[in-house]
Length: 288
Image (cartoon, rainbow, N blue to C red; front, side):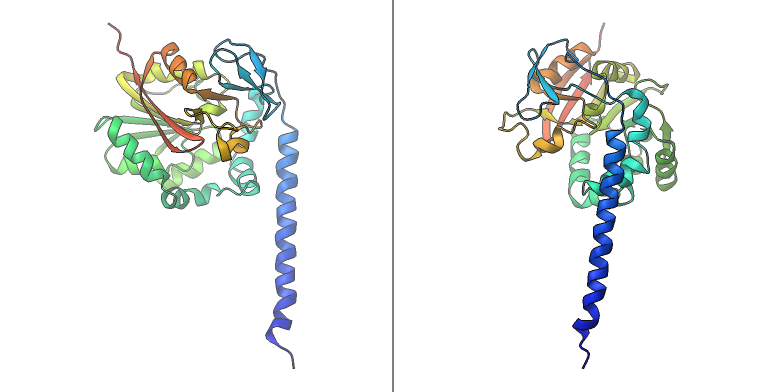
C-alpha cells in the first residue's frame, strides 16, 4: 500500500533542493557583484581626524577626533548606480541577506512598527503642513502616508527603475538623481532614513539639505549613531552596521552634533527606533 508520506517525500526533497540551489545562486550573484566593485581609500574621517585601528573590523578605522567609524575602502561613486539598482540591491542583495524585497517592504515596514514610529517622530517635530522631501525614499511608504495627510511630497532615488516602480505604485513625484548633486525645490522637512551612512561626503550631504530647507526647516535622519557605548559597538547589530560594501561613515554622538554645527543645523532631539537605527532631529539655524 502506497502511503501519502511516500509520495510527499520526493516532492519535499525536490522543493528543498530547489531552495538550496536558489540560495546558492543568490549568494553567487551577490558576492560576484560586491567583489567586483571598485573601491577607493579613506585615510581620514569626514571631520578631518586621523584613524586608529578598529579591532572588530579591520576594514574600518575609528576617528581620533569625533570617535566615529570610517570605511577605509569605500565603493567608488561610479559603482553606486549598480550597487543600488532595482534588480541587484532591492531584489538580489536583500533576498541574499534575508531582508524583504522592495515589493515586500511596504507591508513589512507597517507590521514591524517602524512606519508608526517614523510618523510619531514626524508629528512631534515637523510643521503641520508644507513640502516634504525624502532622499532614498525606496518604496515610498512614509511619503504615501504624509501625502494622505496633506503634505506635498517629493522622493529621490538613484536608480531609474526604482523611480519608475515607486512612482507607479504611489502616484507621487519621485525623482532620479544622486543627492546632493542634483537640483531640487525647497522644502520644509528633509527626510533620510538609513541613507546618511551610505554617503561618501556627509558634510556636503547635509550642507545641501540646509540649502534647500526653508528657514527653521527640520531634517529627520535615521542612521547608525553611537549614542550609547556597547561592546561590541551596536551590540547585536555590529556586523550589519559595519557593512563595508555600503556603509562609509558611522557617526558617534559627538560626530552628529559636530556635523550639524558644520552644516548649519542644531540637534534638537535624539531618539532610537532600535539599535543601529538611531534618530537625529536637526533644525536649520536661522541666521540674521
